[in-house]
Amino acid sequence: MTRTVTIDPVTRIEGHAKITIHLDDAGKVADARFHVVEFRGFEKFCVGRTFWEMPGITARICGICPVSHLMASAKAGDDILGVRIPPTAEKLRRLMNWGQIVQSHALSFFHLSAPDLLLGMESDPAERNIMGLIQKHPNIARSGIRLRSFGQEIIRLLGGRSVHPAWTVPGGVREPLSVAKRDQIRRALPEAFEISELALDLLKDSYDKFDREQVTYGEFPSLFLGLVTPQGGLEHYDGLLRLVDAEGRVLEEKQPSQFRSFIGEAVEPWSYLKFPYYRPFGYENGGGMYRVGPLARLNVCDYAGTPRAERELRQFRRLSDRSKPVPGSFHYHYARLIEILFCLEKIEEVLDDTEITSDHIRSHSGVNQRRGVGVSEAPRGTLFHDYEVDDDGVLKSVNLIIATGQNNLAMNRTVKQIAQAYVNGDGLTEGIMNRIEHGIRLFDPCLSCSTHAVGQMPMHVQLLAADGAVLDEQLRG
Image (cartoon, rainbow, N blue to C red):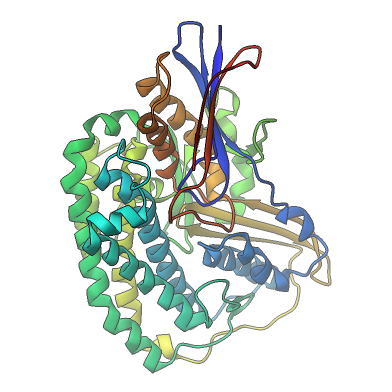
């Protein structure tokens, strides 16, 4: 008889979700699904508010990456105003966004994934967390905390606080950067560079232990989407939307405001998370599946554009035929660390720009366009804010396409691939459950404002017969 294994909730991710694994009559994995079981409703309850309020409101979607929503929302507001923001305002926005990517990637690598990578996928779950990492590898854990703190401090110095800063607004930013704050960031850069190099060495030294994981954790062909500079370089704030196929061929390269022409959204009854897909290839059978985020950004760009990140990018591309994208989701870890290095180099570069402390930081106007689209690269991937307003700037419709949603098809495919590699009819072990969860952590999904970096959430796993009878059951936490 067919059976279903449920992992609920998935631990060490930001938010609440569960995984079901469906076994066939022979006890082999027939299918696996990643279910998002919480509902937020931001797209609906923002209707009727003004677009001026949206950066502050939508930042509350997430406590880990609020800056991403600040950026995308403010850029949609710029579009509605029809203004070009001052050069200093753009540089300051970029600075905050780079700081956010550093802190978020540091959290993902050191807090959420390093316990698996350093303590072992099948180690004792009571120790396989940040507290266990502190006990066994205190210097590494401390370094992760310091690197994340560096990124958070940039956000705080610019916006007044490190979470939900009401700083980025349509037309620019609220406050300039003082010379004293600029110098404070500069003084912290050497340590941040040192930690980023430590993390890269740490990951690369561990690769030999994960040969099987590299070919079973999301190793499949897909499309990849991300922003690039007009010249094809690595980009996180502006530029062109580029979509490439599994062979590296460019299928789309358009202005971000044209995303609707090739991105569709599907829904399924078993998840609140939408399923974006590439329209020309369709939704059925996963033909239009694409990935976003660090792996995708390194796959769609032609070059990094900073010396240290460029060297690492060349090494990264040796994981595949250099003319083709790197296909394995396990390599999201490596891509994150390369992006941290890139962001640190860009931060160093922009702090040396004399214009960075200018006080011309905002353009003023009224409603000039009925529709505004803001696109920015969140740590987890490309983020779209699409607003329609009336003549008074009151929102008539809101569409938010988040990175985690765009990775939804790929996350489901990854979970299935890992389950097929490790699960059989003999039942689940703690280690196998964690391996399947790790497949989700690769994408670092952001499902709500909460995070679960310390300790573990309760987990309820049931093995169900086709008629719903409980064949096996495990509880933890």
